[in-house]
Length: 130
Image (cartoon, rainbow, N blue to C red):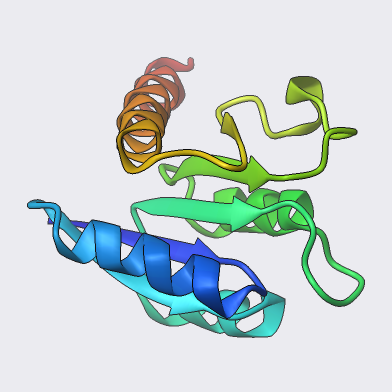
């Protein structure tokens, strides 16, 4: 079972993504309404996948949160979501998968799968570094 931390400051988005993942075999989701809650979850739980909105209330962006998550959990998979048309793929962490809102459930599940594959590849690189 993979634990997915969903971070957004829109309660409806959190609820919809949580509902989708709760109905998908192999996933357990944790909802974080903003950065403070997400940081606490990252410290207290083993997180396999982080799904984070780029624009969050406060001074920390979702991208900065992703970078923090990678430091805390080097094998974490990252999915960055946004409705902001100004955000570009090259702004997200290298291992991250970029998903523009609005998206469907299958698109999210495909992005999570791709992110898990990228994280696994990154993990293998870390193990083989001399």
